[in-house]
View (cartoon, rainbow, N blue to C red):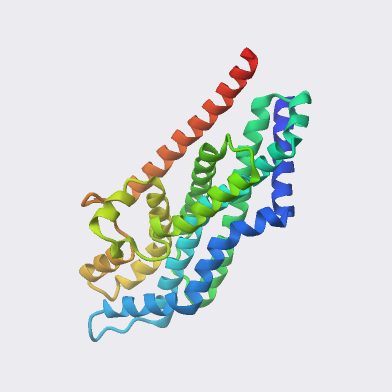
Amino acid sequence: MNKNIKDFFTLTKRHTKLYFKEKGAFLPSLITPVILVVLFITFLKNVYSSVLLTMIPEGIVLDGSVVNAFTGCWLISSILGVSCVTIAFCSNIIMASDKFNKTINDFYVAPIKKNVISLSYLFSNFFSTMIICLSCMILAFVYFAFVGWFFSFVDVLAIISVVILSCLFGSTLANVFEYYISTIGGISAISTLVSSMYGFICGAYMPLAQFSLAIRNLISCLPGTYCVGLIRNLFMGGVLREMSNQLPTEVIETIKINFDGNLFFFGSQVEVWQMFLVVAISTLVFLTINLCFVFIKKKKKAII
């Protein structure tokens, strides 16, 4: 095996293991998902169920499994959509810790290329975020197996693929903002700010349809909005297909609008494939910026 590749995997494994071992770094990253679960259990589930049932025409009774699956899809898509970003911001604390404790200097004096060291932090962030999000996704599928399963095999594959893409999006985004931060307090401040705000701006705590038009237009300019929207469409797709067997098309469209199944960019509806394209291009852009950081930093050190 090439030495650079071996060094890369060794360092990435080290950072990832350290993140899960260090409770002070790992546990804070779960704050936002835990808040969403608590909110859902306490009152959001009943609120969403009530809102959904008010949209159902008189004379039509939805099965309890359909209602439970729908509200569950809303919760899980919110958790995954938020976690793909917030956890990525939190797990970068390992990089900041190594900088603060001067541990990274030991890597620099070792026969390891500096770009390999930088990339190991980025991909460790990605792997850590992906492990947590995929674990949440598996638990979600277990939950749906009991309350109501409406996913096809294609749906499951699509969800897995999009969650992985979203984790890469979150990791590259977090690294752009936190690459040059060398203090634990700085990382903690940014991750706390993102964790507290991201749930609102992506529609995890309440549907975007509840915001004013000006705020919705502003939020529609953020790529993270389409990341959550993409995950939400894939989760709700199966149960909406089941509901379409009993409900008119107009009612299904109303439900999708009110629960952010349909997203709009300044009044124009954004299709699912367009959401995917926005997330993919944004991820590529942020990844390119990260690679530029690595190249520029290496070049500056060489000049000095």
